[in-house]
Structures are given as C-alpha cells and as structure tokens.
Amino acid sequence: MNNSDDNYAGVLLEQIRDQNKAVLEAVGDIRAKVADLPTRDEFNELKQDVKTIKAAVTATNSDLKKHKSLPAHVAHGHA
Image 1 (cartoon, rainbow, N blue to C red):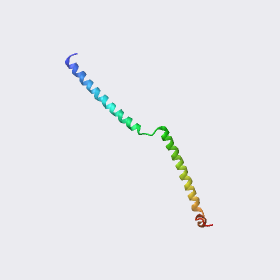
Image 2: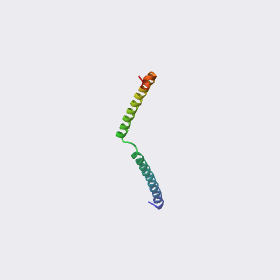
Image 3: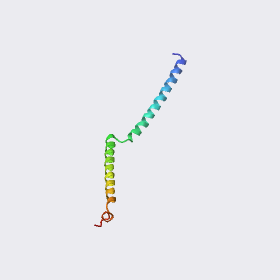
Image 4: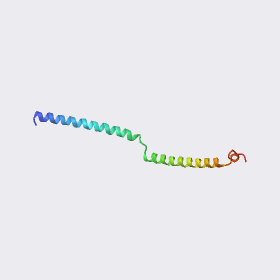
C-alpha cells in the first residue's frame, strides 16, 4: 500500500465510523421512544376499559331516553 492508499483507507474508515455513530444514535433514540410505549397487556387492559366505558355510556343514554319519555310527574318522583 502506498501513502495514497493509506489516506483513502483512512477516509473510508472515518466515514464508516461516522455512519456507525449516526446509526447507534438513531437506535438509541428509537429505544427511548419504544420504552415509553404501553406493553401489549397494558394496551389490552385499556381496550377493555374503553369497552366498559362505552357500554356504561350506552346504558346511561338509554336510561336517560326512558326517563325523558316518562310523564313529568313520574319522572320527578311524584306518583
């Protein structure tokens, strides 16, 4: 290898090191973002909670519609 080849190899090595550093930084950023995501179990629990809330709201809306359709004296607790 002559001096020109050594310089070329040195430049390539420096570029590869810079690229590897950039990749490692990106992977580190991704790992930090993934760490903040909910686990599958947490997500499934949240889905179940949302289903429960939807069912409760639907039932409450149904009860409210029935209440509004009652005669005024019955709806206000006067028999």
